[in-house]
Length: 604
Image 1 (cartoon, one colour):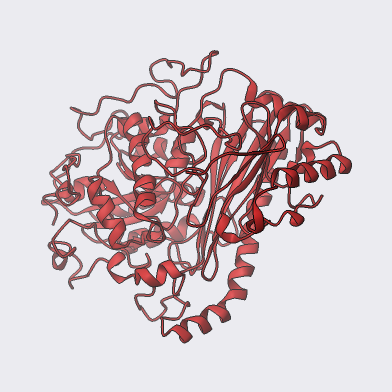
Image 2: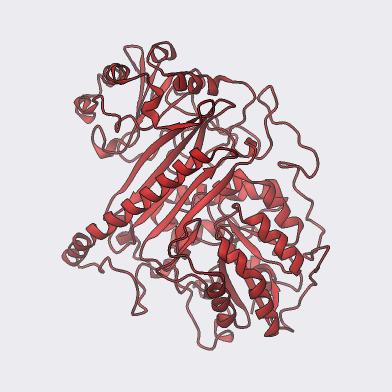
Protein backbone atom coordinates (compact mmCIF):
# COMPACT_ATOMS: atom_id res chain seq x y z
CA UNK A 1 0.00 0.00 0.00
CA UNK A 2 1.56 3.32 -0.98
CA UNK A 3 2.05 5.76 1.85
CA UNK A 4 1.75 9.52 1.93
CA UNK A 5 5.15 11.05 2.46
CA UNK A 6 5.37 14.53 3.94
CA UNK A 7 8.41 16.60 3.07
CA UNK A 8 8.60 20.28 3.89
CA UNK A 9 4.85 20.57 4.35
CA UNK A 10 4.16 18.75 1.07
CA UNK A 11 2.46 15.42 0.44
CA UNK A 12 3.82 13.06 -2.17
CA UNK A 13 2.46 9.84 -3.59
CA UNK A 14 4.38 7.68 -6.03
CA UNK A 15 3.26 4.19 -6.91
CA UNK A 16 6.00 1.65 -7.24
CA UNK A 17 6.88 -0.63 -10.10
CA UNK A 18 4.05 -3.02 -10.88
CA UNK A 19 1.27 -0.83 -9.54
CA UNK A 20 -1.34 0.80 -11.74
CA UNK A 21 -2.81 3.49 -9.56
CA UNK A 22 -2.77 5.22 -6.25
CA UNK A 23 -4.65 2.37 -4.59
CA UNK A 24 -5.66 -1.11 -5.71
CA UNK A 25 -8.88 -1.23 -7.69
CA UNK A 26 -12.00 -2.49 -6.01
CA UNK A 27 -15.42 -3.03 -7.51
CA UNK A 28 -17.00 -3.16 -4.06
CA UNK A 29 -18.67 0.13 -3.14
CA UNK A 30 -18.23 -0.36 0.61
CA UNK A 31 -14.43 -0.65 0.57
CA UNK A 32 -12.88 2.19 2.58
CA UNK A 33 -9.73 3.54 0.96
CA UNK A 34 -7.30 5.38 3.26
CA UNK A 35 -7.29 9.11 2.78
CA UNK A 36 -4.40 10.60 0.83
CA UNK A 37 -3.83 14.28 0.08
CA UNK A 38 -3.13 13.57 -3.61
CA UNK A 39 -6.49 11.86 -4.13
CA UNK A 40 -8.99 13.81 -6.20
CA UNK A 41 -12.63 13.05 -5.59
CA UNK A 42 -14.71 13.24 -8.72
CA UNK A 43 -18.11 14.82 -9.15
CA UNK A 44 -20.97 12.48 -10.03
CA UNK A 45 -21.72 13.39 -13.68
CA UNK A 46 -25.35 12.30 -13.38
CA UNK A 47 -25.88 15.17 -10.93
CA UNK A 48 -24.89 17.74 -13.58
CA UNK A 49 -27.89 18.96 -15.54
CA UNK A 50 -27.63 18.55 -19.28
CA UNK A 51 -24.33 16.66 -19.32
CA UNK A 52 -23.98 13.89 -21.92
CA UNK A 53 -21.06 11.71 -22.95
CA UNK A 54 -19.60 12.01 -26.44
CA UNK A 55 -17.78 9.05 -27.95
CA UNK A 56 -15.26 8.85 -30.77
CA UNK A 57 -14.18 5.39 -31.94
CA UNK A 58 -12.93 3.48 -34.92
CA UNK A 59 -14.67 0.35 -36.16
CA UNK A 60 -14.09 -3.06 -34.59
CA UNK A 61 -12.29 -4.15 -37.76
CA UNK A 62 -9.87 -1.24 -37.69
CA UNK A 63 -6.14 -2.06 -37.33
CA UNK A 64 -6.22 0.20 -34.25
CA UNK A 65 -8.25 0.03 -31.06
CA UNK A 66 -9.66 3.50 -30.41
CA UNK A 67 -12.17 4.62 -27.80
CA UNK A 68 -12.30 8.29 -26.81
CA UNK A 69 -14.99 9.73 -24.56
CA UNK A 70 -15.49 13.21 -23.16
CA UNK A 71 -18.40 15.19 -21.71
CA UNK A 72 -20.57 17.73 -23.45
CA UNK A 73 -21.81 20.37 -21.05
CA UNK A 74 -25.01 22.32 -21.22
CA UNK A 75 -24.65 25.97 -22.30
CA UNK A 76 -20.86 25.76 -22.55
CA UNK A 77 -20.02 25.75 -26.29
CA UNK A 78 -16.51 27.09 -25.73
CA UNK A 79 -15.64 24.24 -23.37
CA UNK A 80 -17.33 21.68 -25.60
CA UNK A 81 -15.30 22.81 -28.60
CA UNK A 82 -12.08 22.68 -26.56
CA UNK A 83 -12.83 19.11 -25.46
CA UNK A 84 -13.67 18.00 -28.99
CA UNK A 85 -10.49 19.61 -30.32
CA UNK A 86 -8.39 17.87 -27.67
CA UNK A 87 -9.99 14.51 -28.53
CA UNK A 88 -9.20 14.98 -32.20
CA UNK A 89 -5.65 16.07 -31.37
CA UNK A 90 -5.07 12.90 -29.39
CA UNK A 91 -6.53 10.75 -32.17
CA UNK A 92 -4.32 12.34 -34.84
CA UNK A 93 -1.26 12.00 -32.61
CA UNK A 94 -2.08 8.33 -32.06
CA UNK A 95 -2.40 7.74 -35.79
CA UNK A 96 1.00 9.33 -36.37
CA UNK A 97 2.60 7.30 -33.57
CA UNK A 98 1.19 3.99 -34.83
CA UNK A 99 2.42 4.65 -38.35
CA UNK A 100 5.88 5.54 -37.07
CA UNK A 101 5.97 2.40 -34.90
CA UNK A 102 5.02 -0.06 -37.65
CA UNK A 103 8.55 -0.77 -38.97
CA UNK A 104 9.95 -1.21 -35.45
CA UNK A 105 7.11 -3.51 -34.43
CA UNK A 106 7.60 -5.71 -37.50
CA UNK A 107 11.33 -5.98 -36.86
CA UNK A 108 10.80 -6.85 -33.19
CA UNK A 109 8.22 -9.52 -34.03
CA UNK A 110 10.47 -11.16 -36.61
CA UNK A 111 13.44 -11.11 -34.24
CA UNK A 112 11.37 -12.86 -31.55
CA UNK A 113 9.92 -15.35 -33.97
CA UNK A 114 6.47 -14.00 -33.16
CA UNK A 115 3.63 -13.07 -35.52
CA UNK A 116 4.02 -9.75 -37.28
CA UNK A 117 2.32 -6.77 -35.71
CA UNK A 118 0.36 -6.04 -38.88
CA UNK A 119 -2.96 -7.67 -38.08
CA UNK A 120 -5.30 -6.13 -40.59
CA UNK A 121 -6.30 -9.74 -41.40
CA UNK A 122 -6.92 -9.11 -45.08
CA UNK A 123 -6.17 -12.79 -45.68
CA UNK A 124 -8.70 -13.94 -43.06
CA UNK A 125 -6.02 -14.94 -40.57
CA UNK A 126 -6.53 -15.01 -36.83
CA UNK A 127 -4.32 -12.01 -36.09
CA UNK A 128 -4.77 -11.15 -32.43
CA UNK A 129 -8.17 -12.77 -32.09
CA UNK A 130 -9.88 -9.57 -33.14
CA UNK A 131 -13.51 -8.84 -33.72
CA UNK A 132 -14.16 -8.68 -37.40
CA UNK A 133 -15.46 -12.23 -37.41
CA UNK A 134 -16.89 -12.15 -33.92
CA UNK A 135 -19.61 -14.74 -33.75
CA UNK A 136 -21.98 -16.38 -31.35
CA UNK A 137 -22.14 -16.27 -27.59
CA UNK A 138 -19.91 -18.56 -25.55
CA UNK A 139 -22.54 -20.99 -24.38
CA UNK A 140 -20.35 -22.37 -21.64
CA UNK A 141 -19.51 -25.79 -23.13
CA UNK A 142 -16.55 -27.68 -21.76
CA UNK A 143 -14.45 -26.89 -24.79
CA UNK A 144 -15.83 -23.40 -25.36
CA UNK A 145 -17.52 -24.42 -28.62
CA UNK A 146 -21.00 -23.12 -29.35
CA UNK A 147 -23.59 -25.89 -29.27
CA UNK A 148 -25.39 -26.20 -32.56
CA UNK A 149 -23.01 -23.92 -34.45
CA UNK A 150 -23.44 -26.01 -37.57
CA UNK A 151 -27.18 -25.33 -37.53
CA UNK A 152 -26.76 -21.66 -38.43
CA UNK A 153 -25.02 -20.44 -41.52
CA UNK A 154 -24.01 -23.87 -42.81
CA UNK A 155 -20.45 -24.64 -41.72
CA UNK A 156 -19.50 -25.08 -38.09
CA UNK A 157 -17.89 -21.78 -37.16
CA UNK A 158 -15.63 -21.60 -34.13
CA UNK A 159 -16.25 -18.50 -32.05
CA UNK A 160 -13.19 -16.24 -32.42
CA UNK A 161 -11.66 -14.48 -29.47
CA UNK A 162 -9.53 -15.62 -26.59
CA UNK A 163 -8.73 -19.05 -27.88
CA UNK A 164 -7.02 -17.43 -30.85
CA UNK A 165 -5.04 -14.91 -28.80
CA UNK A 166 -1.40 -15.54 -27.94
CA UNK A 167 -1.85 -14.12 -24.45
CA UNK A 168 1.88 -13.96 -23.67
CA UNK A 169 2.47 -12.06 -26.87
CA UNK A 170 -0.42 -9.70 -26.17
CA UNK A 171 0.91 -8.90 -22.70
CA UNK A 172 4.30 -8.14 -24.25
CA UNK A 173 2.64 -6.05 -26.94
CA UNK A 174 3.76 -8.34 -29.78
CA UNK A 175 1.17 -8.80 -32.50
CA UNK A 176 -1.37 -6.78 -30.53
CA UNK A 177 -3.14 -3.91 -32.17
CA UNK A 178 -2.25 -0.41 -30.96
CA UNK A 179 -4.79 0.96 -28.51
CA UNK A 180 -5.88 4.45 -27.51
CA UNK A 181 -8.31 4.86 -24.63
CA UNK A 182 -9.36 8.28 -23.36
CA UNK A 183 -11.87 8.65 -20.57
CA UNK A 184 -12.75 11.53 -18.29
CA UNK A 185 -13.70 12.66 -14.82
CA UNK A 186 -15.22 15.84 -13.47
CA UNK A 187 -12.82 17.28 -10.92
CA UNK A 188 -15.04 20.31 -10.26
CA UNK A 189 -18.56 21.40 -11.11
CA UNK A 190 -20.00 24.60 -9.71
CA UNK A 191 -21.90 27.64 -11.00
CA UNK A 192 -18.53 29.34 -11.44
CA UNK A 193 -16.18 26.70 -12.80
CA UNK A 194 -15.93 23.26 -14.40
CA UNK A 195 -12.88 21.04 -14.44
CA UNK A 196 -12.59 18.03 -16.77
CA UNK A 197 -9.70 15.60 -16.39
CA UNK A 198 -9.00 13.66 -19.57
CA UNK A 199 -7.10 10.49 -18.79
CA UNK A 200 -5.29 8.81 -21.66
CA UNK A 201 -3.94 5.29 -21.96
CA UNK A 202 -1.95 4.47 -25.06
CA UNK A 203 -0.32 1.30 -26.31
CA UNK A 204 2.04 1.67 -29.25
CA UNK A 205 4.65 -1.04 -29.51
CA UNK A 206 5.23 -2.74 -26.16
CA UNK A 207 4.32 -0.52 -23.22
CA UNK A 208 1.03 0.91 -21.97
CA UNK A 209 1.64 4.59 -21.30
CA UNK A 210 -0.62 6.80 -19.16
CA UNK A 211 -1.05 10.54 -19.13
CA UNK A 212 -3.62 13.07 -18.03
CA UNK A 213 -4.64 16.60 -18.95
CA UNK A 214 -7.13 18.74 -17.06
CA UNK A 215 -9.03 21.54 -18.77
CA UNK A 216 -10.80 24.26 -16.83
CA UNK A 217 -13.82 26.31 -17.85
CA UNK A 218 -14.44 29.59 -16.06
CA UNK A 219 -18.14 30.23 -16.48
CA UNK A 220 -17.93 33.79 -15.26
CA UNK A 221 -15.52 34.65 -18.08
CA UNK A 222 -16.70 32.07 -20.64
CA UNK A 223 -13.08 31.03 -21.03
CA UNK A 224 -11.25 27.70 -21.24
CA UNK A 225 -7.75 27.30 -19.92
CA UNK A 226 -5.28 24.52 -19.33
CA UNK A 227 -4.16 23.72 -15.82
CA UNK A 228 -1.37 26.28 -15.91
CA UNK A 229 -4.11 28.90 -16.24
CA UNK A 230 -4.97 28.23 -12.61
CA UNK A 231 -1.81 30.18 -11.76
CA UNK A 232 -1.39 33.95 -11.77
CA UNK A 233 1.59 34.02 -14.13
CA UNK A 234 5.11 32.85 -14.89
CA UNK A 235 6.44 33.85 -11.49
CA UNK A 236 3.78 31.72 -9.82
CA UNK A 237 4.67 28.82 -12.11
CA UNK A 238 8.32 29.11 -11.15
CA UNK A 239 7.44 29.12 -7.44
CA UNK A 240 5.15 26.12 -7.89
CA UNK A 241 7.97 24.22 -9.64
CA UNK A 242 10.22 24.99 -6.67
CA UNK A 243 7.60 23.78 -4.20
CA UNK A 244 7.09 20.57 -6.16
CA UNK A 245 10.82 19.88 -6.27
CA UNK A 246 10.85 20.44 -2.52
CA UNK A 247 8.02 17.96 -2.16
CA UNK A 248 9.94 15.39 -4.18
CA UNK A 249 12.95 15.53 -1.89
CA UNK A 250 13.96 12.24 -0.38
CA UNK A 251 12.77 10.07 -3.24
CA UNK A 252 16.28 9.20 -4.36
CA UNK A 253 17.19 8.42 -7.95
CA UNK A 254 13.74 7.07 -8.83
CA UNK A 255 12.39 10.60 -9.25
CA UNK A 256 14.48 13.10 -11.16
CA UNK A 257 13.68 16.37 -9.46
CA UNK A 258 15.72 18.39 -11.95
CA UNK A 259 13.16 17.57 -14.63
CA UNK A 260 10.59 19.71 -12.80
CA UNK A 261 10.95 23.12 -14.42
CA UNK A 262 8.60 26.04 -14.97
CA UNK A 263 7.29 24.51 -18.18
CA UNK A 264 3.49 24.73 -18.58
CA UNK A 265 3.55 21.38 -20.42
CA UNK A 266 4.70 19.68 -17.20
CA UNK A 267 1.85 21.23 -15.23
CA UNK A 268 -1.00 20.29 -17.56
CA UNK A 269 -2.99 18.24 -15.04
CA UNK A 270 -3.79 20.03 -11.79
CA UNK A 271 -6.86 19.97 -9.59
CA UNK A 272 -7.85 20.47 -5.96
CA UNK A 273 -8.71 18.01 -3.21
CA UNK A 274 -11.50 18.56 -0.71
CA UNK A 275 -9.19 20.60 1.52
CA UNK A 276 -8.32 22.98 -1.30
CA UNK A 277 -4.78 21.62 -1.66
CA UNK A 278 -3.44 21.90 -5.20
CA UNK A 279 -2.74 18.41 -6.57
CA UNK A 280 -0.09 18.32 -9.30
CA UNK A 281 0.17 15.01 -11.14
CA UNK A 282 2.72 13.90 -13.70
CA UNK A 283 2.49 11.46 -16.58
CA UNK A 284 4.28 8.15 -16.72
CA UNK A 285 8.03 8.57 -17.33
CA UNK A 286 7.70 12.37 -17.17
CA UNK A 287 9.91 13.05 -14.16
CA UNK A 288 11.47 9.67 -13.52
CA UNK A 289 11.44 5.97 -14.17
CA UNK A 290 8.40 4.64 -16.01
CA UNK A 291 8.11 2.01 -13.28
CA UNK A 292 6.96 4.68 -10.82
CA UNK A 293 3.50 4.96 -12.33
CA UNK A 294 1.53 7.96 -11.17
CA UNK A 295 3.54 10.57 -9.27
CA UNK A 296 1.56 13.36 -7.61
CA UNK A 297 2.31 16.15 -5.15
CA UNK A 298 -0.22 18.03 -3.02
CA UNK A 299 0.64 21.66 -2.28
CA UNK A 300 -1.18 22.81 0.89
CA UNK A 301 -4.09 25.16 0.28
CA UNK A 302 -2.56 28.16 2.05
CA UNK A 303 0.65 27.96 0.04
CA UNK A 304 -1.15 27.30 -3.23
CA UNK A 305 -3.58 30.16 -2.62
CA UNK A 306 -0.83 32.77 -3.05
CA UNK A 307 -0.08 31.47 -6.55
CA UNK A 308 -3.57 31.29 -8.02
CA UNK A 309 -5.30 33.36 -10.67
CA UNK A 310 -8.94 34.42 -10.32
CA UNK A 311 -9.96 31.24 -12.15
CA UNK A 312 -7.68 29.25 -9.83
CA UNK A 313 -9.39 30.64 -6.73
CA UNK A 314 -12.81 29.70 -8.13
CA UNK A 315 -11.52 26.22 -8.88
CA UNK A 316 -9.99 25.88 -5.40
CA UNK A 317 -13.30 26.69 -3.78
CA UNK A 318 -15.37 24.31 -5.94
CA UNK A 319 -14.44 20.98 -4.25
CA UNK A 320 -15.02 22.54 -0.83
CA UNK A 321 -18.61 23.45 -1.67
CA UNK A 322 -21.34 21.39 -0.06
CA UNK A 323 -23.98 19.46 -1.92
CA UNK A 324 -21.90 17.03 -3.94
CA UNK A 325 -21.93 13.28 -4.52
CA UNK A 326 -19.16 11.18 -6.01
CA UNK A 327 -18.98 8.00 -8.00
CA UNK A 328 -16.92 5.07 -6.73
CA UNK A 329 -14.06 3.97 -8.90
CA UNK A 330 -14.44 6.09 -12.05
CA UNK A 331 -11.16 4.59 -13.16
CA UNK A 332 -9.84 1.26 -14.33
CA UNK A 333 -6.23 2.39 -14.37
CA UNK A 334 -5.87 4.92 -11.54
CA UNK A 335 -8.53 4.09 -8.92
CA UNK A 336 -7.78 7.07 -6.71
CA UNK A 337 -11.12 7.93 -5.14
CA UNK A 338 -12.78 6.83 -1.94
CA UNK A 339 -15.55 4.36 -2.64
CA UNK A 340 -18.74 5.54 -0.93
CA UNK A 341 -21.69 3.27 -0.46
CA UNK A 342 -24.73 3.57 -2.65
CA UNK A 343 -25.20 3.88 -6.39
CA UNK A 344 -24.87 6.67 -8.86
CA UNK A 345 -27.58 8.61 -10.56
CA UNK A 346 -29.28 10.59 -7.79
CA UNK A 347 -28.46 14.29 -7.52
CA UNK A 348 -27.04 15.33 -4.20
CA UNK A 349 -28.94 17.07 -1.47
CA UNK A 350 -27.68 20.18 0.25
CA UNK A 351 -25.93 18.15 2.91
CA UNK A 352 -23.97 16.11 0.36
CA UNK A 353 -26.14 13.01 0.77
CA UNK A 354 -28.05 11.50 -2.11
CA UNK A 355 -31.44 13.09 -2.64
CA UNK A 356 -34.43 10.83 -3.25
CA UNK A 357 -35.75 11.60 -6.74
CA UNK A 358 -39.39 11.55 -7.67
CA UNK A 359 -40.72 8.54 -9.52
CA UNK A 360 -39.79 8.70 -13.17
CA UNK A 361 -37.14 11.33 -12.60
CA UNK A 362 -33.44 10.85 -13.34
CA UNK A 363 -31.99 8.61 -10.68
CA UNK A 364 -35.36 7.22 -9.64
CA UNK A 365 -35.60 3.67 -8.33
CA UNK A 366 -35.16 0.94 -10.90
CA UNK A 367 -38.35 -0.39 -12.45
CA UNK A 368 -39.63 -3.73 -11.21
CA UNK A 369 -38.94 -6.11 -14.08
CA UNK A 370 -39.20 -9.34 -12.15
CA UNK A 371 -42.67 -10.22 -13.43
CA UNK A 372 -42.98 -8.14 -16.58
CA UNK A 373 -42.78 -9.57 -20.09
CA UNK A 374 -40.63 -8.09 -22.82
CA UNK A 375 -43.34 -6.45 -24.85
CA UNK A 376 -43.44 -2.72 -25.18
CA UNK A 377 -46.48 -0.57 -24.76
CA UNK A 378 -47.90 2.27 -26.81
CA UNK A 379 -47.55 2.92 -30.53
CA UNK A 380 -46.25 -0.03 -32.50
CA UNK A 381 -46.18 -2.34 -29.47
CA UNK A 382 -44.20 -5.50 -30.16
CA UNK A 383 -45.36 -9.05 -29.52
CA UNK A 384 -43.66 -12.05 -28.01
CA UNK A 385 -41.96 -14.23 -30.59
CA UNK A 386 -40.98 -17.91 -30.69
CA UNK A 387 -37.74 -18.02 -32.67
CA UNK A 388 -38.13 -21.78 -33.10
CA UNK A 389 -41.15 -21.05 -35.27
CA UNK A 390 -40.20 -17.86 -37.12
CA UNK A 391 -37.04 -16.30 -38.53
CA UNK A 392 -35.41 -14.02 -35.94
CA UNK A 393 -32.60 -11.49 -35.88
CA UNK A 394 -31.28 -9.38 -33.02
CA UNK A 395 -30.26 -5.74 -33.31
CA UNK A 396 -27.50 -4.83 -30.85
CA UNK A 397 -26.19 -1.37 -30.02
CA UNK A 398 -22.74 -0.85 -28.50
CA UNK A 399 -20.85 1.90 -26.65
CA UNK A 400 -23.73 3.99 -25.31
CA UNK A 401 -25.63 5.51 -23.83
CA UNK A 402 -24.95 8.80 -25.52
CA UNK A 403 -26.77 11.84 -26.88
CA UNK A 404 -28.42 9.78 -29.66
CA UNK A 405 -29.77 7.08 -27.33
CA UNK A 406 -33.04 8.83 -26.31
CA UNK A 407 -33.88 9.42 -29.99
CA UNK A 408 -33.15 5.78 -30.74
CA UNK A 409 -35.40 4.61 -27.90
CA UNK A 410 -38.20 6.84 -29.19
CA UNK A 411 -37.71 5.37 -32.64
CA UNK A 412 -37.73 1.75 -31.47
CA UNK A 413 -40.85 2.36 -29.40
CA UNK A 414 -42.65 3.81 -32.39
CA UNK A 415 -41.55 0.90 -34.58
CA UNK A 416 -42.50 -1.70 -31.98
CA UNK A 417 -39.00 -3.19 -32.09
CA UNK A 418 -36.82 -4.48 -29.29
CA UNK A 419 -33.02 -4.42 -29.18
CA UNK A 420 -30.10 -5.31 -26.96
CA UNK A 421 -27.90 -2.50 -25.63
CA UNK A 422 -24.32 -3.32 -24.62
CA UNK A 423 -23.57 -0.32 -22.44
CA UNK A 424 -20.27 1.17 -21.32
CA UNK A 425 -20.38 1.72 -17.56
CA UNK A 426 -18.65 5.10 -17.58
CA UNK A 427 -21.14 6.39 -20.17
CA UNK A 428 -24.11 4.95 -18.32
CA UNK A 429 -22.93 6.62 -15.10
CA UNK A 430 -23.59 9.99 -16.72
CA UNK A 431 -27.11 8.98 -17.90
CA UNK A 432 -28.15 6.12 -15.61
CA UNK A 433 -31.87 6.74 -15.97
CA UNK A 434 -31.62 5.67 -19.62
CA UNK A 435 -30.83 2.16 -18.36
CA UNK A 436 -34.15 2.09 -16.53
CA UNK A 437 -35.96 3.31 -19.61
CA UNK A 438 -34.36 0.61 -21.76
CA UNK A 439 -35.52 -2.12 -19.39
CA UNK A 440 -38.99 -0.63 -18.93
CA UNK A 441 -39.55 -0.53 -22.71
CA UNK A 442 -38.66 -4.18 -23.19
CA UNK A 443 -35.05 -3.91 -24.33
CA UNK A 444 -32.21 -6.02 -23.00
CA UNK A 445 -29.30 -4.28 -21.26
CA UNK A 446 -25.92 -5.97 -21.52
CA UNK A 447 -22.44 -5.28 -20.16
CA UNK A 448 -19.75 -3.70 -22.37
CA UNK A 449 -17.19 -3.08 -19.57
CA UNK A 450 -16.57 0.13 -17.68
CA UNK A 451 -14.22 2.13 -19.93
CA UNK A 452 -13.99 0.07 -23.15
CA UNK A 453 -10.42 -1.13 -22.61
CA UNK A 454 -9.20 -4.17 -24.49
CA UNK A 455 -9.85 -6.63 -21.66
CA UNK A 456 -7.42 -9.21 -23.00
CA UNK A 457 -4.56 -6.90 -21.98
CA UNK A 458 -5.73 -6.57 -18.38
CA UNK A 459 -5.11 -8.66 -15.29
CA UNK A 460 -7.89 -10.84 -13.90
CA UNK A 461 -8.59 -8.37 -11.10
CA UNK A 462 -8.98 -5.50 -13.55
CA UNK A 463 -11.19 -7.55 -15.85
CA UNK A 464 -13.40 -8.33 -12.86
CA UNK A 465 -13.45 -4.66 -11.89
CA UNK A 466 -14.34 -3.50 -15.41
CA UNK A 467 -17.21 -5.96 -15.72
CA UNK A 468 -18.24 -6.02 -12.06
CA UNK A 469 -18.74 -2.29 -11.62
CA UNK A 470 -20.79 -2.17 -14.80
CA UNK A 471 -22.91 -5.06 -13.51
CA UNK A 472 -23.60 -3.21 -10.28
CA UNK A 473 -24.51 0.02 -12.05
CA UNK A 474 -26.90 -1.66 -14.48
CA UNK A 475 -28.56 -3.68 -11.74
CA UNK A 476 -29.03 -0.55 -9.60
CA UNK A 477 -30.98 1.15 -12.39
CA UNK A 478 -32.81 -1.74 -14.06
CA UNK A 479 -33.45 -4.02 -11.11
CA UNK A 480 -31.73 -6.93 -12.85
CA UNK A 481 -28.08 -7.83 -13.28
CA UNK A 482 -27.12 -8.43 -16.92
CA UNK A 483 -26.55 -11.98 -18.10
CA UNK A 484 -24.97 -10.96 -21.41
CA UNK A 485 -21.72 -9.13 -22.09
CA UNK A 486 -19.78 -8.14 -25.16
CA UNK A 487 -16.04 -7.70 -24.84
CA UNK A 488 -14.78 -4.39 -26.23
CA UNK A 489 -13.65 -4.88 -29.84
CA UNK A 490 -14.91 -8.46 -29.53
CA UNK A 491 -11.50 -9.48 -28.18
CA UNK A 492 -11.44 -12.17 -25.52
CA UNK A 493 -8.90 -14.27 -23.68
CA UNK A 494 -9.29 -17.26 -21.41
CA UNK A 495 -9.11 -14.89 -18.44
CA UNK A 496 -11.87 -12.74 -19.93
CA UNK A 497 -14.09 -15.77 -20.48
CA UNK A 498 -13.41 -17.26 -17.06
CA UNK A 499 -14.08 -13.94 -15.31
CA UNK A 500 -17.28 -13.42 -17.26
CA UNK A 501 -18.51 -16.87 -16.28
CA UNK A 502 -17.80 -16.20 -12.61
CA UNK A 503 -19.98 -13.10 -12.89
CA UNK A 504 -22.78 -15.09 -14.54
CA UNK A 505 -22.19 -13.51 -17.93
CA UNK A 506 -22.44 -15.06 -21.38
CA UNK A 507 -20.13 -13.41 -23.91
CA UNK A 508 -21.83 -12.36 -27.14
CA UNK A 509 -20.25 -11.55 -30.49
CA UNK A 510 -21.98 -10.68 -33.75
CA UNK A 511 -22.59 -11.99 -37.27
CA UNK A 512 -23.09 -8.74 -39.17
CA UNK A 513 -20.88 -5.69 -38.69
CA UNK A 514 -22.23 -2.50 -40.26
CA UNK A 515 -18.92 -0.57 -39.95
CA UNK A 516 -15.95 -1.23 -42.22
CA UNK A 517 -12.28 -1.44 -41.25
CA UNK A 518 -11.47 2.09 -42.46
CA UNK A 519 -14.56 3.75 -40.98
CA UNK A 520 -15.33 5.52 -37.72
CA UNK A 521 -18.31 5.63 -35.39
CA UNK A 522 -19.43 8.06 -32.72
CA UNK A 523 -19.26 11.83 -33.03
CA UNK A 524 -16.47 11.88 -35.65
CA UNK A 525 -17.88 12.73 -39.09
CA UNK A 526 -14.82 11.95 -41.23
CA UNK A 527 -14.92 8.35 -42.40
CA UNK A 528 -18.30 7.63 -40.86
CA UNK A 529 -20.60 5.40 -42.97
CA UNK A 530 -23.89 6.94 -44.06
CA UNK A 531 -27.31 5.75 -42.99
CA UNK A 532 -28.05 4.12 -46.36
CA UNK A 533 -24.79 2.16 -46.26
CA UNK A 534 -25.41 0.97 -42.71
CA UNK A 535 -28.99 -0.09 -43.52
CA UNK A 536 -27.89 -1.93 -46.66
CA UNK A 537 -25.18 -3.85 -44.80
CA UNK A 538 -27.55 -4.82 -42.01
CA UNK A 539 -30.35 -6.05 -44.28
CA UNK A 540 -28.16 -7.78 -46.85
CA UNK A 541 -26.06 -9.50 -44.19
CA UNK A 542 -28.98 -10.77 -42.14
CA UNK A 543 -29.87 -14.44 -41.87
CA UNK A 544 -31.96 -16.48 -39.47
CA UNK A 545 -30.42 -16.19 -35.99
CA UNK A 546 -28.12 -13.31 -36.93
CA UNK A 547 -26.81 -10.79 -34.39
CA UNK A 548 -26.33 -7.39 -36.02
CA UNK A 549 -23.82 -4.89 -34.64
CA UNK A 550 -24.74 -1.19 -34.51
CA UNK A 551 -23.73 1.74 -32.30
CA UNK A 552 -26.11 4.10 -30.51
CA UNK A 553 -23.27 6.64 -30.26
CA UNK A 554 -23.43 7.13 -34.03
CA UNK A 555 -26.10 9.44 -35.44
CA UNK A 556 -26.10 7.82 -38.89
CA UNK A 557 -26.62 4.39 -37.32
CA UNK A 558 -29.67 5.71 -35.50
CA UNK A 559 -30.87 7.36 -38.73
CA UNK A 560 -30.61 3.94 -40.42
CA UNK A 561 -32.86 2.12 -37.95
CA UNK A 562 -36.25 2.70 -39.67
CA UNK A 563 -34.86 1.39 -42.97
CA UNK A 564 -33.24 -1.57 -41.20
CA UNK A 565 -36.46 -2.52 -39.42
CA UNK A 566 -38.54 -2.12 -42.59
CA UNK A 567 -36.05 -4.10 -44.67
CA UNK A 568 -35.74 -6.96 -42.19
CA UNK A 569 -39.48 -7.25 -41.65
CA UNK A 570 -39.95 -7.15 -45.41
CA UNK A 571 -37.77 -10.27 -45.62
CA UNK A 572 -39.86 -12.01 -42.98
CA UNK A 573 -37.65 -11.51 -39.93
CA UNK A 574 -38.88 -10.87 -36.40
CA UNK A 575 -36.76 -8.49 -34.33
CA UNK A 576 -35.92 -9.83 -30.87
CA UNK A 577 -33.36 -9.37 -28.13
CA UNK A 578 -30.28 -11.58 -27.96
CA UNK A 579 -31.73 -13.26 -24.87
CA UNK A 580 -34.87 -14.18 -26.81
CA UNK A 581 -32.78 -15.40 -29.72
CA UNK A 582 -31.15 -17.96 -27.44
CA UNK A 583 -33.84 -18.37 -24.81
CA UNK A 584 -37.47 -19.22 -24.35
CA UNK A 585 -40.05 -17.40 -26.49
CA UNK A 586 -40.57 -13.88 -25.19
CA UNK A 587 -38.43 -14.55 -22.14
CA UNK A 588 -35.65 -12.66 -20.45
CA UNK A 589 -32.39 -14.52 -19.93
CA UNK A 590 -32.18 -15.59 -16.31
CA UNK A 591 -29.04 -15.44 -14.18
CA UNK A 592 -27.43 -18.87 -13.84
CA UNK A 593 -25.33 -18.79 -10.71
CA UNK A 594 -21.72 -19.82 -11.20
CA UNK A 595 -21.91 -20.21 -14.96
CA UNK A 596 -22.59 -17.99 -17.89
CA UNK A 597 -23.23 -21.04 -20.02
CA UNK A 598 -26.72 -21.78 -18.70
CA UNK A 599 -27.81 -18.19 -19.16
CA UNK A 600 -28.76 -18.88 -22.74
CA UNK A 601 -30.20 -22.35 -22.43
CA UNK A 602 -32.43 -23.32 -25.26
CA UNK A 603 -30.26 -21.77 -27.94
CA UNK A 604 -30.16 -23.18 -31.43
